Image (cartoon, rainbow, N blue to C red):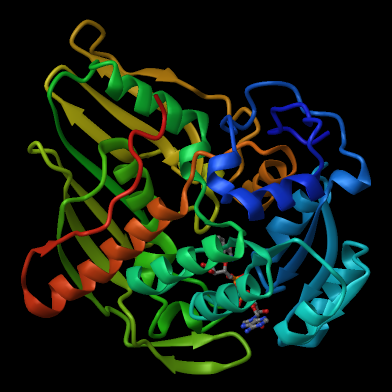
Length: 402
Ligand SMILES: NC(=O)c1ccc[n+]([C@@H]2O[C@H](COP(=O)([O-])OP(=O)(O)OC[C@H]3O[C@@H](n4cnc5c(N)ncnc54)[C@H](O)[C@@H]3O)[C@@H](O)[C@H]2O)c1
């Protein structure tokens, strides 16, 4: 049984839904919101109701996505693709997927599918997403969807014109802990909200160089989670001030040897959310962490929010949250809340999108929010280069949880 599926399958099957999306502009035809894990799992969909999935990028993260997708009652895994063909072949064999390809063009010309799950290098997402949309595919993309706001907005327009949808990681706003924090803020429990802090770091991946090269960096890989959570809780950023740096100028990468680091591996970003509310995100690839990449062992508050009458701390990381601590004027000892994950896992994004495409429900995360975070990252780099505060033009539908 896959936890995290909340809805009964509607009478509308996948084909009908995809056709209606194309005809009416998908966003307008959808109703309801996916809240993972609030109810028991739905029974498996019939094969014809499943969304046919092609996975591109068969490296590290595919090892987390594919087990989840292979158990998703709304997904049918059709093909894999990697420019390292043996990786595509190995994942296809491991998960009993019928087709594997060495290039996106061959994948798009090969066995039919509906949703591209893009798990490639950060620098590859933008052009692969564009190519797949041009071929009429829906997209689930690891972060970022695109490398700039302008490029991302063009992709959204292209998707609309084609009658397909695109969404991107992270899915942190889908967790029950995010929901509890958002509702606590909306209820006014914190009094006058003043400031927030988030931090996420480790000593960096060793398996691929793209994390350290132009278009990579610690902000789109790590800070992206905190930026999504803080803008999700406190509202879109109105302006950004940042300092970023390269602390480790060269790195040794598995099977590749020494590389030059050309994108920031250390970042301090200040956000102005309006009405006097300020927040700070700290991220980097030089943070010694006794737990390394293992989220379940992180027991600190990695996100704290302060108000005049209460403060809140997220226990663990927003991508793998373990609870929320709340201290108020009336109950000044921290009380631990929302300790149940309720089926939420960080690697569920592509499966949730299959559920949405199959049932017509909407996820809580939006491409506009993902692009607002891309815009913040670009602004943070601009702030470092110019020494100036950067005004933001992008925004997204907020509040997310009411
Ligand atoms: N590794 C993780 O734990 C993790 C967790 C969350 C998110 N992510 C994100 O997932 C994405 C991938 O990260 P990863 O760690 O799996 O990297 P990785 O290097 O292990 O895997 C990327 C794979 O994509 C393939 N690839 C690159 N360009 C391609 C192209 N044009 N066509 C087809 N295949 C191509 C590479 O050959 C490689 O096998 C990144 O955006 C990263 O930020 C990774």
